[in-house]
Length: 78
Image (cartoon, rainbow, N blue to C red; front, side):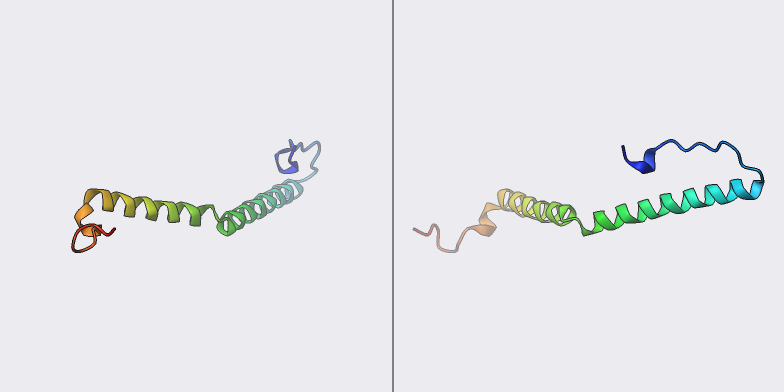
């Protein structure tokens, strides 16, 4: 199990300052995890692949909708 999802228990905090300090540390940890995950997603090739396939699909649909635009001049080549 990933340690960031482990249950956190506060058994005894003598003062409000200790409790505040504890939660500030937890928030910093979660912020760090979130930033790491965002960085990983930005470096991922998945977004680039999706854009490439979207572009290909749009081009194909455009050719299917307007076949005369893609036909070579003078009829068929053969």
